[in-house]
Image (cartoon, rainbow, N blue to C red):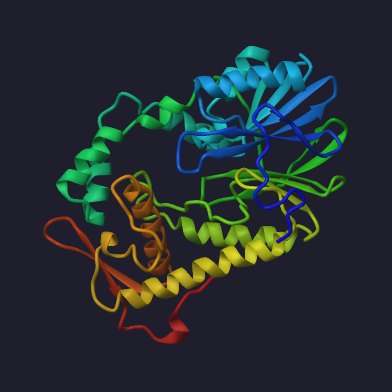
Length: 351
């Protein structure tokens, strides 16, 4: 990969870096291990289109106020586009839409799922979720910690508008007299939308393509048998086969880069290697919580176990979808996974 601004470029907060005609890069800090997010300002006629918004927190709102005046010159925001539902992308979308009386643009699945997750705030963890994590091998202390954290998603998201403008993969939209193609992805979130401008040779990639890290691809209690990793691998391959290689990729995290096809190939092949290691690990029956070592180089602690178990289950479900692994539930409600011994090579479904 090559990085026009360097692989460790870190724009000053409140600064806007011009990456192409009418397209500006801004970076916001976040109080977590992934400590920043890249957001994008696009000229749009007499105003500005914003792509992604950061978490709902006072420091981010203060940074936006500075950008509104010093960079955007007090001109209006014409619309807010959110690539997907995660709080670092959608957290302040409702606040900006209220402030400028403008529309929120999202895909349908992302908008509705975000609304649903926000509504969990204040609820007790449902029994279906506790059953899900118990089946994965969580002990009682871990189940109680999950219950305490349940519903925190909505705390990082300002209330969304009650109406939105739907975006669909394959459509073309116009921003400041230029056409942008909407590029779909799935797996990291239900209906992620990236934006590709052929005239500028730019791809605003959201979390679909990151240069040095891979987004979390998880299974959640709401869809315990989902094969999100299969969706992720398929959408990554489609994007690689559809878009040209010479685009400048504008990711939500880390620095803009060239090398779209190489990076997507790395992501796909990396997951395939993980699946191979996990299958080897299942030469004897194991719970999901026993399967971290083939997938993660770091130690999984109590702060990261929920994300880790979601990603582990995504890989296990993918192996089951390929008919390479069996799952059996014991009398305590815990699932045990093991290699299938009764399968011939020509029976394996490998999409």
